[in-house]
Amino acid sequence: MVELAAAAGDTALHVADLPYRLCSWALDEPENVGVWEDSERRIVGWAVVQFPFWMFDIVVHPDAEPDLFGVALDWAIGRAEELLGTSAERPCWFVLTFSEQTDRRKALEAAGFICQADVGEDSWSQVLLSRDDALAPAFPVVDGFTIRRLAGPEEVGAYVEAHRAAFDSTNMTVDWRARTLTAPHHLSETDLVAVTDDGRVAGFCIGWLHEGTRTGRIEPLGVLPEFHRHGLGAALLAECLTRLADCGATRLVVATDSYRDPARALYEGAGFVPTRPILVYRRDFVAS
Image (cartoon, rainbow, N blue to C red; front, side):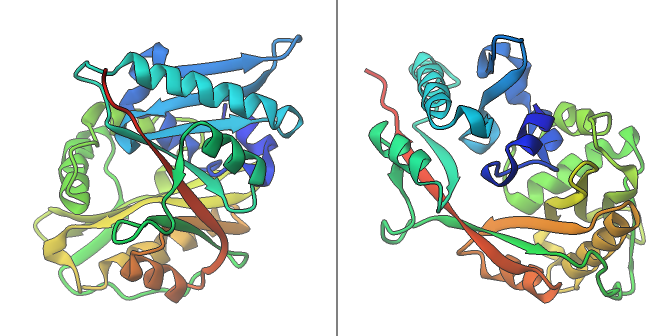
């Protein structure tokens, strides 16, 4: 599934960080994953109903566009409808697409999805930022904190607690985070935490690398609210970028919500530049 995303090239929103997403608890249920093969049993498309993100992840080989995208979208919609009225239902689902993917946008709109870029106060869009120079300047860590690799399985619980606090969400689980440690393309060298002198996890940053494309990606980066304004986000990012470069990355990418000015400022301060707008499409689902 990861290699198909790499083969999809610029049409895929996620490649290097796909192992992170494919470790989510949504994949605990095989019914949440659809896979399409050609006559030679090669995977040409897949879709995941990603409960933690409230999103449909869809990857299709360029030669199979646009027909297979519509098929995969219909399958995901059907799966979402199956869950209406159950404890697993979601009132709405989202699909991301690059702004220039006009065929996908037409398919989404035909299926009842609405672009959220200009819907008033709750407007939502994202942006992909990149930098071709993988080396980042060092950023000094404030006294009282240390940046180091995650200590392994024994520190997963502390990481999960920090992740939930940083994003004010309970989506991250111990099982999900533990699976990432054995996922393809996981690098322990770029799985970082910032800890206080007494050992508390105050922030985290994971760098992913797809060796075939030599592309690195940050996902996720977070700092607990009580430790904001200590420069931990910038220090974690700089250290992770440097380590990704040491591991062979020649291009680095990251995506963030357009409205999150502090996050965007952080990445642009580290040399990232906006390259591609990402549109967010939404469809509401109501139980009959």
